[in-house]
Length: 210
Image 1 (tube, rainbow, N blue to C red):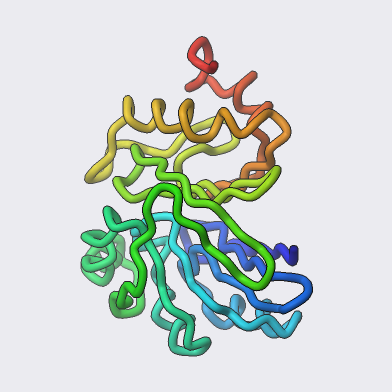
Image 2 (image 1 turned 30 degrees about the horizontal axis):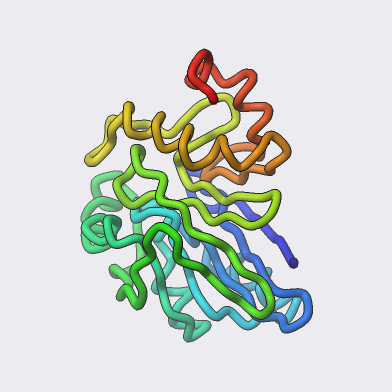
């Protein structure tokens, strides 16, 4: 699989471009800002984007979805519980003093167990709420893009609308930790990590990991 990442926007969101090596079909995950830089990475490997996916609806993760959709013609997918945040994109971004595209049209609502396919590659959707009601993880063997659920040494904040600390911890333990210690974790912000590293050293998981 072709795997690319870049940090976008003032809130330093990890945006990902994944593509099938054989067919060059691919997806963009969390295009929060810096659309020109994202499009440059797409062009580098002659990738044809077949879907734009958000791990959740917070403005810093979807701020340039509309720009990417307009340039690629790809549909946009997000968990159904993320729709209210998507619809409030412009207003919430303005509250932070930032600009964003107009709210994108949602073409597909993702739910637990769905798949995201591009070329010969398949990702599976796990619903991991707690930071945001619609937060999902996109999982393939040995890897997971997890949005703002689990970070290196920390977890997603739960003081925003729809946040729930107990639910987030339950989601991490039930949906992410079982992926196995060698699984590479790609969070929405900050450095990449592994399940094993977080199971053993993350202070939020101490004493409660299966």
